[in-house]
Length: 332
Image (cartoon, rainbow, N blue to C red; front, side, top):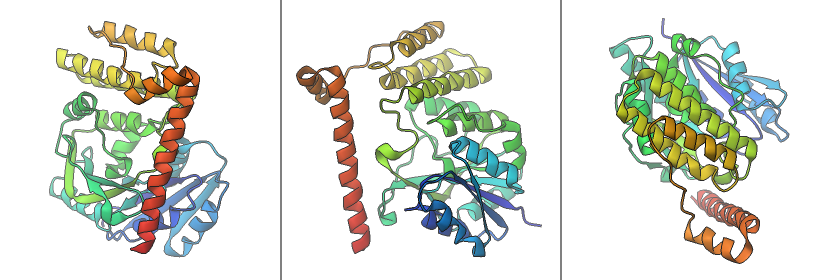
């Protein structure tokens, strides 16, 4: 019997995109699949729209708003699949994504193989999705995958993974304490339990860019800053559990240095913790240099107003980009 694949979708206020996402899940060419949507207390029409797909075999469950990680844990608890496909409520799978990955798995069937694939980013127009290969677009051991990620500040999008149930259960639940980088931390644990990543280039995922609306955007949120640093500490502990060599320590220091830009202007306490961790690793962090735009804002407006102005400029830029792309998608 062919393996059953569970496509698990957490959804919160995704009324604009959920129908398209569900259509991409329903259209999967792999014949044995179940689709489970957990509506995480949406206040718009997400739940209503998702329930319209019930005739196509989609199971929809509503819960109070507990966050994406809790919704994913709920979806997995309800699932029966031999393989797990995580899918956010605004992203899309190519029709043969799951089939191509499972055919690759069948060539070398190992329960703890972790399957990944190519992904491209778009806003509204699928035809304009940009697929930009990175060092993670290849077969890799868990250690090499984590080192590439931390050395080069690169990642794979959540939906690229296809994970066996055995591997999913070994990794444990999604961490509900982590607000923005919950997928980054979670797949580190999946990697630790795996015997390596199998990259399937012909399988594809479309990742919808949502700008400052995305869950991982930190901005001025102190809760997200604390959550991000918690995730970074865990990343460092995970990779050092595999190897504690000079290269690993250097990669961890680089990872901390890049992450410092999220905290240095607001949270001196987190900066001090990061500096102590870098010293433990044998390195030293440098104070991030602000962009010339921010320096200009700060000189004229002061720190607090400059931060707000920076946020407003980013919001306006993203709103304009989304509006233009949405208008062009309608024209097409």
